[in-house]
Amino acid sequence: VLAAPARVLDLAGRTSLADVLGVVAEAELFVGNDSGLAHLANAAGTPTTVVFGPTDPDATRPWDGPRPDGAPVRLQIARERVPCAPCRFKRCPLDHACMTGLTFDLHA
Image (cartoon, rainbow, N blue to C red; front, side, top):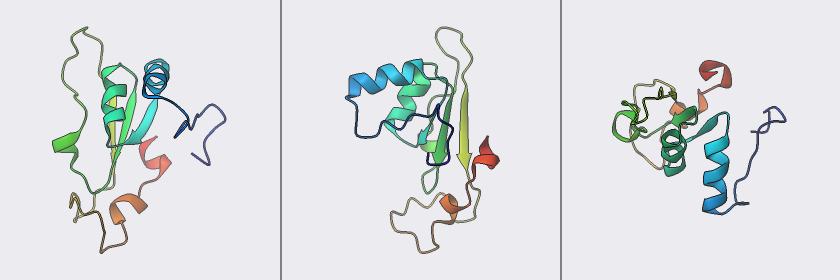
């Protein structure tokens, strides 16, 4: 977010749930971690990139099947493929290799 263009909004801690849902539904793109908000952005039809580290995208990724309205699903999974992932550890013994190797260029 710090190196992002001026059009990027960081609203963390400054919105209600209703506010953030409205923003996400109207956004040109949503980029976030494996979270409920990523699922909501994807469900709203917003192009969505979800960053995965120690969690398993095959188990918890947003729905990428056919949409009821027939619109295309625009979901991208960003992850660094390392042998230890997904480990689901909250404390990493390997310096978070699954996260520190991620770059914007890798998933742009």
